[in-house]
Length: 448
Image (cartoon, rainbow, N blue to C red; front, side, top):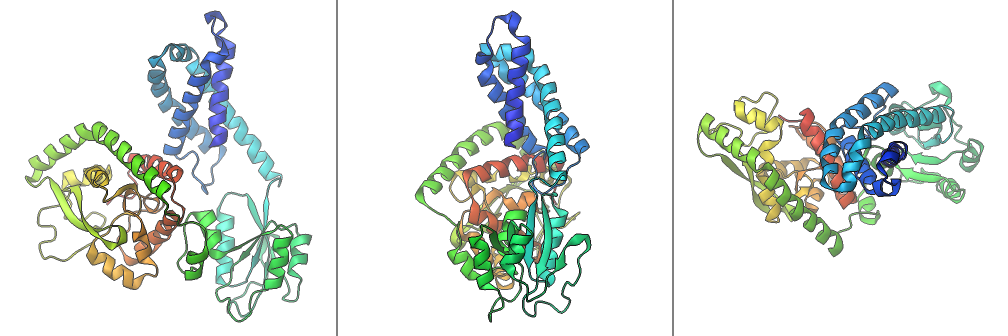
């Protein structure tokens, strides 16, 4: 992302240098518009998935997405640059800058691909364990961008009834008697991942792992690995001690104040911008099925406190006439035709901006669930109540990383993303999630 922003800034300055001589304008005066151009294009790059982590992208995909970003960003930047004199000059080079940016991104991407293909910068990983967890870690590494390679597996204890004995592609299981630090040094290992289900009873080679750390080799457990690579905290391998002693989960006054200020400011802006859409939605709902236009439902908020969540009504008024709480499903017959469109575009969620202003919700956080669902999910899913340690959100990390869910298993998967957010939330992550949410809304992903 930083490379793309730098590329856009540089191309605007290059275009100014090449084309502005006859205007009598120096390249220095174009610096601010160049940075603005980079911000616009980088923001659109996030929206259109140009920087999605862990998603393999061919040169054709990168070229296409970059072209779309520049085509959409061109008129936006053109209007933006008309606000001041420097911007008016910037308009003259906007087209050239866009073409240079496209060529620059493709050139840089080609260069990076060539460097990675040569093995430069490749992370060499040694997996401790030979069971199901070890195989799962290897699969995740192989499915991701080709920036890492598994050099082998170090067996420890009765890890699994189907241990790895031979691995295609060069990786293999080392003998149990092998020297772990020696293997790390011989194969130039950058990272050791401890992928063992049961770690009690002296199973792990603690001394060997300590020596690896002393050699400068990173050592991670399963939770840390999945958190870094997939942006989630796997519940199966999660231990209470990791949650207690691990980094993250910071809830200080400065962070709370910053997040609250951000919530209020952006919510007011969004309400002003979305007011025409909200009025139109209210009229369409009323014309289709009458009052009420809004739907208020009890949800569970921070620290387990209930609150009334406000939404545009998207279902029939008798959707739960029998009083039984039900998850929405695909092609749910209770959803009205207008409601289906509102859900697809997430317009039904806009009234929750008032919940954000009142302090019951945040713009970003775990989505609030109904008390009837929470009581059951808390009993069936470990650590489920931890998602209530912060305010629920209008959108969240789970919403942009996982499709819409309507089952206990879906809730378990989404909790893993919620725990990642609870542990690592920051203003920068909130901005990224909001920009990714725009992409999800534009593509209609996940809505039921």
